[in-house]
Length: 73
Image (cartoon, rainbow, N blue to C red; front, side, top):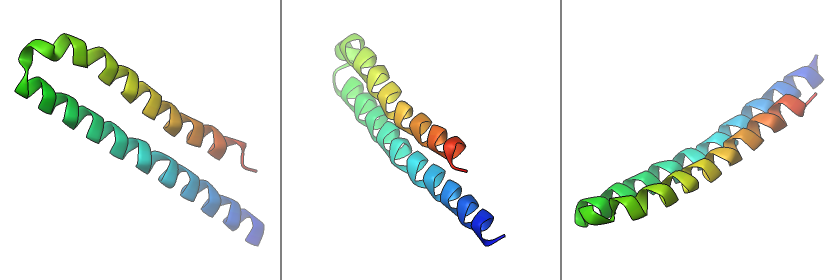
C-alpha cells in the first residue's frame, strides 16, 4: 500500500513540475512575440514562425514529462 502511494505522488510531482516550466516558457514566449509585433507590426511574419517553433519545443518537454508519468510503475 505504501509503495503505491509513493508512485502516485511521484507521478503527480513529475507531471506538475514537467508541466509548470513549459507553461511559463510558452507564456513568456508568446508575450514577448506579441510585444515585438506591437512595436513593429511589419515584423509579424518574421516573428510568428520562430514563436510557433519555440512553443512546440517547449510543449515537447511537457509531453516528455507525460511519457515519464506513464512509464512509472
